[in-house]
Image 1 (tube, rainbow, N blue to C red):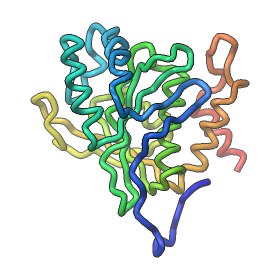
Image 2: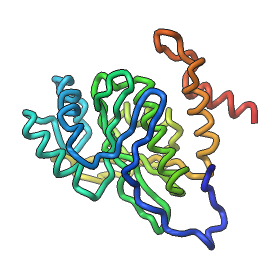
Image 3: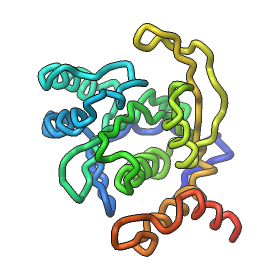
Length: 233
């Protein structure tokens, strides 16, 4: 059920993200609590020989496995953020990560970020479902009022992904950060708890097996499913 609240007189601070895995039809989302998936992630990320998946992140690409493992131990297990590994059911191997971060429990605000998808995970049902499961955890399970998505304003794939998933664009913060020795303008997006029930319904209908051909190709786009649901209400 949704935790959407208009009268906040009795609002209580939200819990921080826990360590329980989330099972989906196409993917298992595992909060990262140890190093079990690190070698798999390195292998998956290394398949992008150009290193472009790290273009808009503050780190990477990594020269070798040892450099990645050192980074992963420090960042993925650092404690400030709850990183999640995305493990497609088709392979059982981790091929992407995303973090719930910058939690503000008192105000019920949290951010999803550090999204990094290996080439094999990009533009797949598993990646969409993984992000849906993380959003659902933040809003439905933990009861956060606002979930934020921020990205480099030049990162058009990330901007498109945010909008496809139902995040609303709120504006761009100019020279918000210094990333890899350059200015970064940051585009802000969000989902509010009051908006989530309709968005959740779109995800659930899109993920139904009947929406996919035997080859795995989608029949209706997520945006079209969401628009059709809106027309029915």
